[in-house]
Amino acid sequence: MPNITPFDPKAHHIRFVGSMTSSDGVEYEFRAILDTGAPWTEFSDQFLHAIGMITEIDQAVSTKSGLQTQKYDRLIVPHVIVCGHDMHELSVSVSHFENHWGIDALVGLDFFKMFRTTIDYKAGQIITEAY
Amino acid sequence: MGQKMTWEEMKKAFPDEWLLITDYERDRLGNIISGVVERHSAEKDEVYQLPSLKKKAAFEYTGESTFRGFRSHAEHHSI
Image (cartoon, rainbow over all chains, first blue to last red; front, side):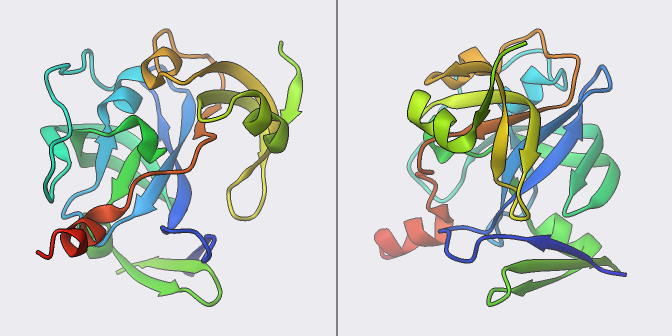
């Protein structure tokens, strides 16, 4: 059975809520955007640091004008839930996000490779099912 | 334990700030209906500081997202 994740079709982006389990086993929810322009799913370094996934933030990294966010590391996260799908040992990018983006994750093409994804804009639904 | 607030109250009390919220409810679109604000600041670093809480929590931003995506950026720069 596919999972159905509602989103607000009137918003600028396809925004939804995901969650990640911290290093001490606590669930933290984050705001994410489904981004077909992102080759890999990436998380803000601040979020990953706050929940104990990384020990320090590279303060020298800042967002530059261009077509890329400032990805600067890769990480295996033990447990993350996106669109209702539990994913374990997921490889993600560690990235610098601007404060006013208001999000902590961009869900990219690696997610589409794992799940057949239908975006029903009229209904405001992301419909996902494992291949 | 702090006082439970509605999302509208949070936006009014903490405009353009990051929040760490516990004991919350969401609507079907994932928007916060109400919850307890454990931390708040316009500086994201202050809200995302360690130590983490020992209970389920959510990070939310009360302002408008300025993220426009890379396609929008490309259009703006005629790429």
